[in-house]
Amino acid sequence: MNIDTRIKFRHLVCFLEVARQGSLARAADKLAISQPALSKTLKELETLLETTLFERGKKGTTLTEAGAAFLGYAGPSVQSLREGVNSLRAGVHEPITVRLGVLSTVESLLVPEVVRRLHERHASLVISIMTGPSAYLLSQLRVGELDLVVGRMTDSPLISGLAFEHLYSESMTLVVRPGHPVLTDPLGPKNLEKYPLILPSAGTTIRKFADSLFVQHGITPSRQRLETLSVAMSRRYVQCSQAIWVAPHDAVRQDLRQGELQELDLGMREPGGSVGLCSNPALPGTAAVQWCVEALREVGQEYREGQYP
Image (cartoon, rainbow, N blue to C red):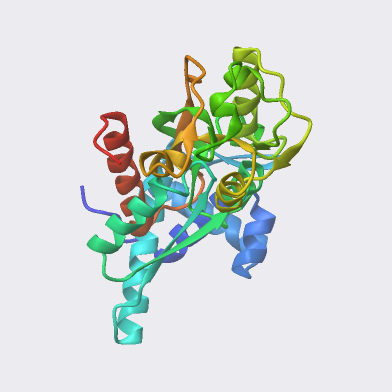
């Protein structure tokens, strides 16, 4: 069946903005048109499609099942058209941007490899990366300031209403610098109270896994702590002190291989949390976002199969 030529670009733009804002009033303000004009445009589109796209209520608008399905096609179509028009107007192929929220669990190995592959495959691609705790990054994803968030976040209450896709599982481990006294202590990892401890920030998803690690092994944690999500700071501090770092295995994998850090053998490893990508179904997808998702899935599969790193 041919596309109904009565469906115009303005219909799609209005539909996408209402889906993004969840409110006719906010969408009308964003598009700089009146709310009655916006309502009329949506009604025209629903009539042409012969379906209801939104449920209207006192708290705003929500996509129907048909609306959610249409969003998956309308968003990428409009974004691709905009990118094509901008490129032609500029007279050159303008770079397109994908905005990633990256948690500390994936900033050392996963994301750099994903970026490398993306730049290898796409000549005009800008990858903008924002780091921080999961609560903040997910809030930015929800309001459309980020396209994807990558890392451990399944325990965050802010994930509700967003789409999460598992990539692989990653465990936590305890590491120290070579020559650390705990390595020759007869009590070994059970005697950690006298050493400073490096932990993920309180309240974060990864901190829950770190705390669980101590409970599982019956270890009393030190009262002297550095709490941070900075992998660079944690690495530097553990290398120049007596500190013990409760680290995501990915963050220290290369350091362990090169002998720059040593792992404390607890007899068993924490089973690992789910590392994945989170997206907002209400936001229109772009070609760049799809490229990024494909690269994340590819590297995630290689992680699961032991092919990378």
